[in-house]
Image 1 (tube, rainbow, N blue to C red):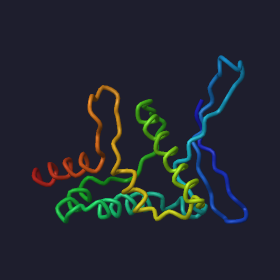
Image 2: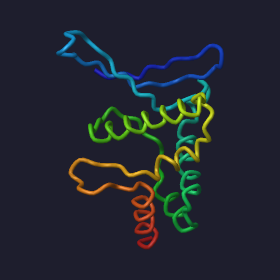
Image 3: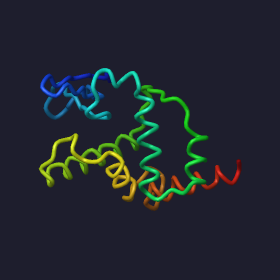
Length: 157
């Protein structure tokens, strides 16, 4: 069973959103929960404008990785309102889990809080690393794949 859990830090006023997934651990013979942070450090009032944060983060991360004007125009055409659903893909969850671990290591090595890294630079850093996907033999480089897609959209439109 999956649920979205909101937790507010009373000292900072930040609200953290987690996807909590319950499952049965056969070895320990008990119910366990896996929690995935997907939106860090937003205040409760910020959730009304969540769509804006995703658009802003996406477009500015594209700029950070060197997207050109034609890529930005194509990306703007592809953007649609944010939709949250509960459709899960284990391959995507595995990739997200790796990203969360890498962010954790970065924060631990820098001895930084979750709000310290620059969001656009961090997004670019995550996009500039190879990823694997089920059924795909070679690694996928997110920046290259996204810019190729935007190139195709731009030349078609």
